[in-house]
Amino acid sequence: MQQFAAPARPVFVEVAMNGADGRFEDFVRARWAALVRYGYVLSGNPHDAADLAQEALARLGSAWTRVQRRDDPERYVRTTMARLHISWWRRRRRERLVGEVPEFGYADGAFTAVEGDTGLWRALATLPRRQRAVLVLRYYENRTDDEIATLLGISRGTVRSQASRGLDKLRASWSGRTEHAIGRQS
Image 1: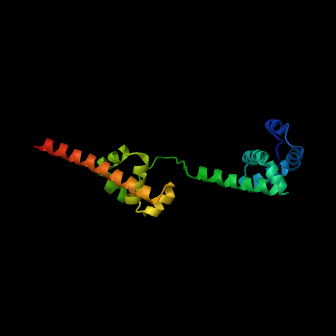
Image 2 (image 1 turned 90 degrees about the vertical axis):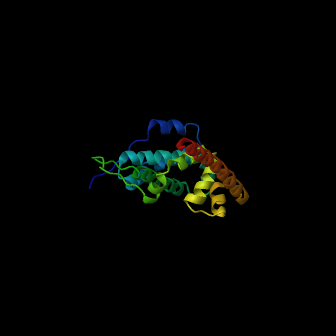
Image 3 (image 1 turned 180 degrees about the vertical axis):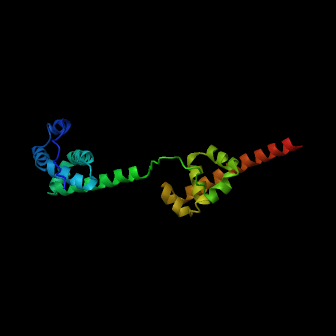
């Protein structure tokens, strides 16, 4: 089994501790190696382990007075490291590199059916952001007014008024297109 030795504290950690509370400095000096080992167990990579420890200690430094009162800075740092690792892992997991580009892409049938009429999406794009969001949530995602209000942080009445105004603008833009299309055909 490969032995893991915690790297020395980077210079910028030492610089960041200058002028800090003496107890915070003592904590960092005493627990650095153990925290990097914990990061190594989480990530399996010594460089990521050091990054996790550094980021968690930076966050601890800004919350030191609050955390110190609870008498458990070690738990705070380890929890922060675990959450950071999960966050970094999720971010990396979203992107998948492949050796070859796939020959065909995936297209959602429902979106493809609506996509045939790009005029609707273009007309939606001209609406103000809130009206567009309300209409998409209501008609594309089939959300209720209460759900939309909660998601957007607005009142139910605002949801209704924004939907009404947005639909009025869409109707006006569609009637103008229809008249224009009819005029062209004659």
